[in-house]
Image (cartoon, rainbow, N blue to C red; front, side, top):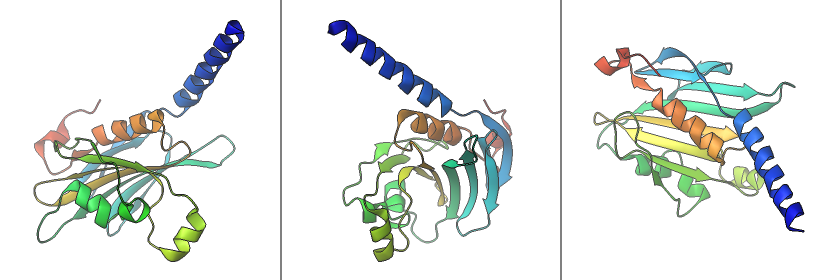
Amino acid sequence: MCLILGASLGLAAYIDHRRSGSLDIALGEPRTVGRLTVRAPAGWEVEEEPGPPQALVAKDYDRQGRHRRTIKVTQEQQTGRVRGAEYYLENVVNVSVVDQDPQFEPFPFLGQSDGTLVAFKIANTRQLRRMVPNLPEAGVYACAVMPDGLTVTVQLTGEGAYGPSSRRALRRVADGIRLADSPSATRPHR
């Protein structure tokens, strides 16, 4: 009995590793979009959205052409009093509509130590979308606000958006973002 249990756990771990490994990403060449230089995932379909907010959208498809995941990097200049990353995600991206008590985690990027990450799922999406038309997509969101008010959000939505491989993918894309108008933007990327 113990041998069967051990074999089952081993097989489950192997399948999970294979599935997670297939969702890992490599980054492509840097692209300048607005004030940012972004390295989108290599091999993904990439397009720019003029905004507001201005965005770079990368979509991943499986071999049958089915949409799997989307990574969207947005940038928006705050005017007036500059608000922090949690405030931006709660009130502008509207994650608090989905979850009244979102669980924010520290997520430093772009040199900002007070960046944040939040993951959320949406139950009964169709019915909720009828009541709340500007409902955000379920997934993982990271946000950083620069001292001058430039707010950068990276979101990953789609298949497996809540798992560890998606968090690694989001971290990899966030680490590849640079300010195009700063001296650090000219450093080589990893």
